[in-house]
Image (cartoon, rainbow, N blue to C red; front, side, top):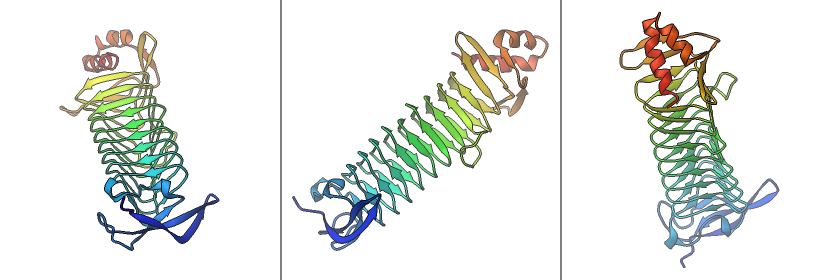
Length: 289
């Protein structure tokens, strides 16, 4: 085995733990012999065999506890990994990203800009978690991009080419295909988008304070949902404060009732008097396939 690095006498303290700066013993990847790297607690935190890859910690990044940086993974800009977490493959972290607990980040995934991955989360493929977003006990895969102030938690599964940004909470939900969720660009607030206990797939946009719970939205290809509360209560499908749908093809706005809970049966009756409402009814029915 050709050793990749050694621990130096340069130390720092974090949470009462002594960390040692690493120094390259040979050249590999973009690291040159003699280069100083980040800080680790022990040799267990960073693979030390050149033959197994070019994994490295740059720029005062930190690995401690039972965490491990493996294969060709790279950590930059004061990123941190702790607990029993693993980063491997060609995954990278930048700008104070934090990975902890038993999370695994692998393949070509990126965790950047103060994003946090915790619990037993699994971030893989080419997924990106960025901009103060947090993922807890969930799976994010494929080409998903999760950005500013998004919180994903409780066994959620996000896949496909989904994009989620702005103040949004995803809880116990599955989102896939090319769904785009766009909340206000601020910290997780009272008026954030909420998607809970739901399964959403297709090519649609969810924005501006939507609240979706216990719903199945499938194969919707022409919808924008905003300022809406969509829910399913047992066998009876209802919608509450469902203020608008937009037909993306025709850019036609269809307003519904505010601050009421309406059954589909009641909506169909009202649609007889208001033809424009008929289109809304058909789209609401699709939410509960």
